[in-house]
Length: 96
Image 1: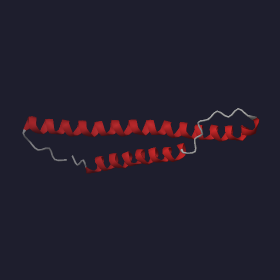
Image 2: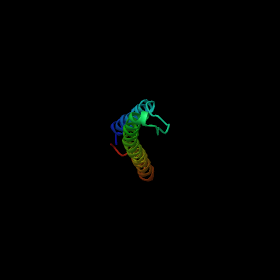
Image 3: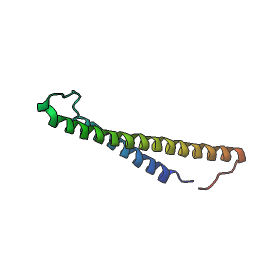
Image 4: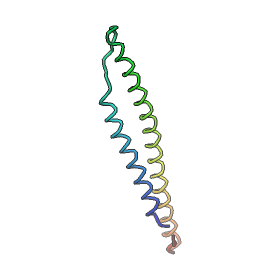
């Protein structure tokens, strides 16, 4: 089995996760951690809510994609180990 394509897909997915983490860091710079309670600061609460919603969506996708990348990597490793086990057990090279 040729693992080049599988590993290339895994690397591309990992790059997407890394890009999403960088994007989250950029969005988080806009985050305001202060509680605004004055009437004069009411416009700031809508901005806080928008940034909070955006970060929640990014976090959701980040967790999901990270889990997919980890599981996909484990599947690739499992396939490789299983193929090597079969190769050593039979003494025959399995063409792939």
